[in-house]
Amino acid sequence: MEQSGIKRKISLSRKALAPVEVQGAAKAWKLALARAAHEAIGLELGLVALRQTRSSLTELLELPPERALIAVLEGPKDGLGLMVIAPDILAGIVEMQMVGHVSAAPAIVRRPTRTDATMVSALIDKALRGLEIELTQSSDLIWTSSFRYASFLEDARPLSLLLEDVPYQVLVADISLAEGAKTGQLLLALPADGRGTAPKAVEAPPSRAAEMVFGVALGEQIMGVSAEMVAVLARMQLPLDRLLNLKIGESLALGTASLDQIDLEGLNGKRLASGKLGQNRGLRAVRISDAETPAARVAMPSPQVPLARSAPDIKKAG
Image 1 (cartoon, rainbow, N blue to C red):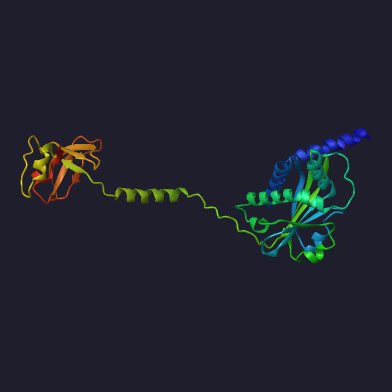
Image 2 (cartoon, rainbow, N blue to C red):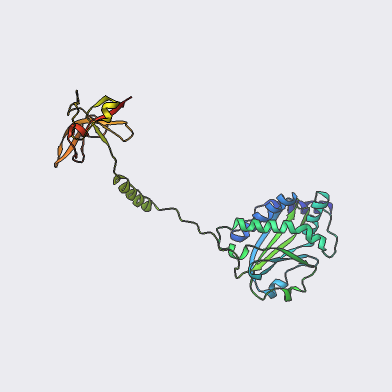
């Protein structure tokens, strides 16, 4: 008989360690519940089985086991839900907080108390918050969000008067605590009509075709931007008083300036290329001769003043 008991315990431990394949809200509840137990009270909680059903109020009232703690959950738009914790699971949670470990001894048969409810309320709220986080972008968020612990009941008799006669989403988890030291069920039931927060919309990644269209449009915008350049025929220095006394119509000798040696500079003064002066369609133009890009004609506006005055870049001498 002792060997049979040991084998049964080993079997329960293996089941607790085996992954439970679930999806949607059930998968989120599995993760949120285990994380909340570990983070809130350091309790290792495993799920042997987890199932989700849609139940009527009449069906829901038949699910709570005897002596279970029934936590009433309050949610959006005056919605009420339930979390039902089986006696052995309740005992394990209390033991973990009182003595720091879960005993393998069977739980004492008793009615749950307000103290029990207080000791599990923080764990309940943490698990419900974790469920919301896991379902942020899921349609299940509409019926799972914003529920928190409100009060508890010693038995299920008042539930028929307390709860609305509406369909409920029910998550029933078969739980193992501390690698099988205690096992039992935990039930979560929330109104199925969806009274909470809508999930956040997720933008679909752009398709390859959309990326190509965007690239072409961006290229057209960039290529259509004007880029100003300065054509420099020569540079010269003048005394400051001579520079300040220049008059309209006065000419300056450019010295070694040559129409075959013109520098093109950006507005920051950086040299971009060199070429020689010419014409293109009636406009002054520079034929580029030593730039890295292929030879091209750069059209420039026709000067409004004599070329001898507009072309040089004059530096002030201090």
